[in-house]
Length: 307
Image 1 (cartoon, one colour):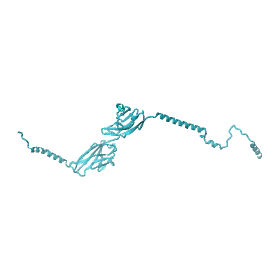
Image 2: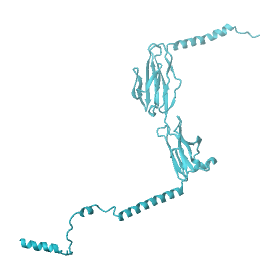
Image 3: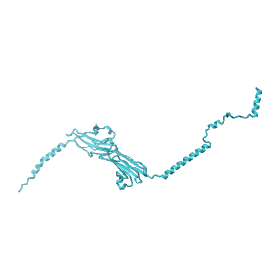
Image 4: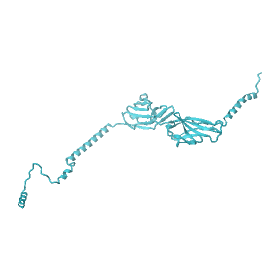
């Protein structure tokens, strides 16, 4: 018959593990430790973001907090000596004791941020945590507002700051567009080509069905961002109306020309200088003889006797 080991021996066998656990926990007591609720936050440009840095264990009531920014192999202070430093001055603050909040983030804020805590009263005085902030930049879209039927139209979508280089996709009325309209029977009435590398959407000849709300999405490993919707209207070109308008303009020009000619013939455009000269005594033109009257001869005859 097999002998059974007393239960107390099994308990004694586990005693060394129990003491090791107590010893390990004793080493952790008084050691500052940090954690973060999100070590890789992603935010849209011009929004706000919180970089989480939380002290989980510490025996120091007033530890020293520092934030540093690591970008392009350079390290600069963000929070030092209880003040926000550098380009974040005026648009960042410390939340709680250690977390950092940034308002109105820009593409230049994409970087690594290191939270450092020094607790002098703890056995392990220093701990740090690194957070990678990614700021997604909204792409710039250019969509023509109105295009006549049958004409070419080009839509542009660009984001030069994205890293790695983004890929582009276009949507019309919230429906994704293929790279080639011929590849999808749904777009058989359209004729366009999409370059996903450059973000250019080209219609060789637009149709009425191409009217709608367009927007672009730029995507890479860091995430995606979209531009605001813009409307493109495709309208019919009224050839008859254009010809009629041209004829009206030509008729108006003909009437104006005729009026000017009539006014000129009636003397409305004669120079007023001729009217001023009519008040002067006309001189004797060359080759013209005047007839002497009897009164003029008598006057001169009487005058000869006076002399």
